[in-house]
Amino acid sequence: MKPEEAMRPDSQPAQDASGPGGAAPPGRRRTAGRGPIRRLFHSLSERTIVSLIYLCGISAIVFVFSIFYFIFREGAPFLRDGFDFQKFFFSINWMPTSEVERSYGILALIFGTGAVTLLAMVVAVPFGLGTAVFIAEFCGRRTREALKILIELLAAIPSVAWGFIGMVVMGPLIVRVTGADVGANALNAGIIVGLMSVPIIVSIAEDAIRAVPDDYRAAAEALGATRWQVVYKVIFPAAKSGLLAAVLLGVGRAVGETMAVLMATGNAVNIPADGRFPFFHALDSVSTLTATIASELGEAPRIGALPDGSYPPAAHHYQSLFVIGIALFVITFAVNLTADLVVKGIRKQR
Amino acid sequence: MTTSTASSAEPRPGLAAAASADRGILTRDFSLWYGGFQALIGVSASIRPGRITALIGPSGCGKTTLLRSFNRMNERFPGVRTSGQITIMGQNILAPEVSLIELRKSVGMVFQRPNPLPLSIYDNVVFGLRLHGGAGSLCRAEEKLAVEKALREVFLWDAVKDRLGARATELQLEQQQKLCIARLLPLRPEVLLMDEPCSALDAEATAAVEELLDGMRRRYTIVIVTHNMAQARRVSDDCIYMLSGRLVEHGPTAELFINPRDRRTEEYIEGRYG
Ligand SMILES: Nc1ncnc2c1ncn2[C@@H]1O[C@H](COP(=O)(O)OP(=O)(O)OP(=O)(O)O)[C@@H](O)[C@H]1O
Ligand SMILES: [Mg+2]
Image (cartoon, rainbow over all chains, first blue to last red):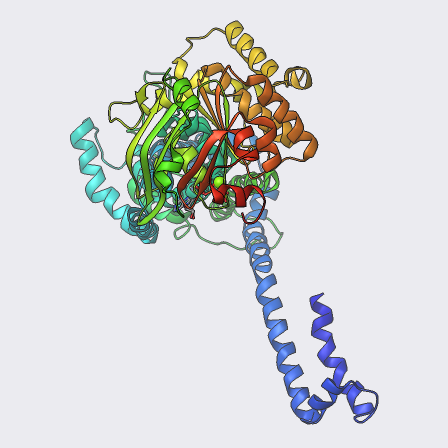
């Protein structure tokens, strides 16, 4: 459709030029009187605009692919030089700079990301869904507008400010309340990232709840349901795909968060779980995939290939960080894609 | 407008006698405002128990509003005020101590557009029971019995008994509307309110629902809003004619249609406006 439109103005001047007083319909003859130059200019500028719009449209795709290409290119030598899949994903030893025993195992980082994300969702899901239910179902219009603006403000707080709050406010608070050794730990980052994920969960969940037809509410209320029963017996089941999508997008946000996590986790490579009760130690310092990349990339030297095409061991640190990037890319892509498909699923149902 | 609204709204002697058993619906000088707009003006009626009463009148005259007053569904809308009295089965339903939940259990409502919940057929029928039963008060077998009984009562059992787990929203409209009636029954309501229950249905489905209504006569007090004069004549025992928020005439359907007392009723049923 659009390519044709883009071409039409192009072919018009030629047609008119061949016979200005010929068989052209009256409407067209009138424009012909304005002069062919002007029309040529008009059609050119229109073509320019159309191509610009095309360019913007495909730029997103180009960006995604070039980013992926770049990350992959930087990480590829590491994958090629005797990459040990098992060791990379299942070893807990992340010692990329050790002179004695270099080791690249990201299991602890995966656990760190998992722990922070899990704790974040423990905070964000009840809080986010609760807020969404309140905004969509229980409050008046004024309160709703005010709350939505506040939530948007929450989303606008830069992540370094959140990290700052984690270090300066949340850390001491956690130490005081729990008696933990350090305030910078998985719990701290979990709470901070949880709060950061709340806005996206609220906005998607609220849309999903408001999309539930009022007929359903009326039906349940006429059967004597209380407002809370309406929420959990009718609205939650009816909006469950949308709510799931909201949570998944929150997860994506938490997995990808870097700066606040770097500041609040303590950034110590550590698995916050073991066989001792209570098995999961939220008060341990951890490090995440994202924070590791951010904190180490600056120090990891980018070393070129030797004449024979191989790389010295020291070059692997830099490259391995990009492999972590690939893993992260895959995780967030999978989460977002699932969320997308879930949302599409709702649309189709309606 | 020679006759005042109040006098023409006075029920006929026969009506009053039957209503004194006080099991029906009694409204006394009931008015309702949506914000500044008065939608019902001094409505007094005594709707007799165990009969089907049709609410007729031109669009916007307040039929739905009156119907929704009987289970207080108008309170869902902001800025609704009322004055006057409504008594259902001897209870003043507007009194502050009345439990909305109990009221809505005994006064069921069927909506204009079939609105089964987006759950299975089975879950729709037991929805009310589960709301009020508390956790696990009803064992599975009792629940199943209640479902079968309710679905049989609306002539839906044979059509759906093999797919009770199917989504209710995928049924045909007629079946959906029957299901909406069926889900009220396990709560043992006394009164059923129906707001144009057939307006979304075709002629055949309408006939099926009317047959169903006919079967429920006497067991329930049914109030049905309809735009369809023929339907009012076919299914109802009594008829209420409303105009601009006022009750104009209330009487046995046969009399009201053959020999209306109010000139405005006569004009309406002759199809001069509405
Ligand atoms: N929720 C509401 N808020 C404000 N005004 C309302 C509301 N519901 C109804 N009204 C108004 O009250 C009047 C009566 O409405 P109602 O729906 O009771 O009429 P009706 O007789 O059922 O009409 P119809 O035959 O079209 O269904 C109308 O003027 C309508 O605009
Ligand atoms: Mg109506």
